[in-house]
Image 1 (tube, rainbow, N blue to C red):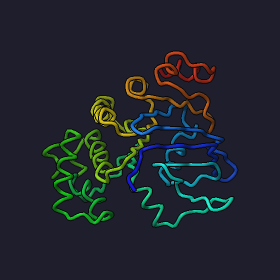
Image 2 (cartoon, rainbow, N blue to C red):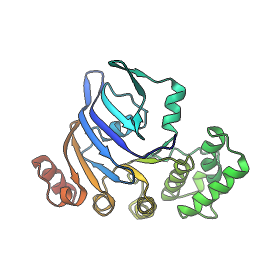
Image 3 (cartoon, rainbow, N blue to C red):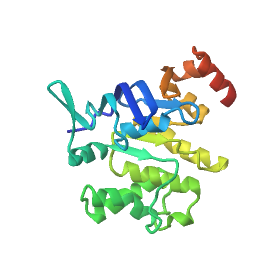
Image 4 (tube, one colour):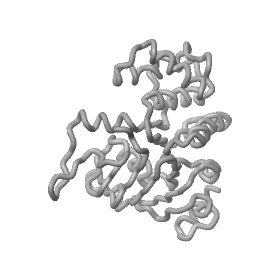
Length: 255
């Protein structure tokens, strides 16, 4: 089934032991939309992203990704976890880029990008290599496929990580503060790739502290604090005229 590129969350809760990290989060991202999640450290932003990608399991609430229940299936009046193989199929349609690049250090940039299609989708190495070369060119790294991660700058490594996620042909891309580990002068080259993805209609859910990027690119901004969705709305409106006092206080510190 072709993925439809939507995310819908209703009253998501998630706890680690006695610590409640997500407390009734609602979220809706339409196909082709860019939604940015902002907020202070420890507010639950990354946990929400990890739930959308199946790296964490929600305790309760409804999560629909790509038009279907994610990780669970409704039978009768109860939700039941899907089989691991089915979850893997659902996750394969969602690309995720982390703060740390998580590249395989013993593999070239090209081989990193090829790894998913070859190992998971069983695509031939010849076809996967051609695809990897196109994707590396798309992120501004044509001619760098032979280089190992240690030979690349942080910004280049993060762009390889984006190309690797795109190689699985996802309908949704998740970014968890993709520029936070970069030197300031390298941030722009990664944001430029993300802007290009946005221009081409990729559904994106982005945890970020880059308010300029959120203002320029996002359709919607969600401000989280203490595991709660404090404010959600049009990106430019929320960033320029936040309604909630807590949002105002946060933006006064970071803008």
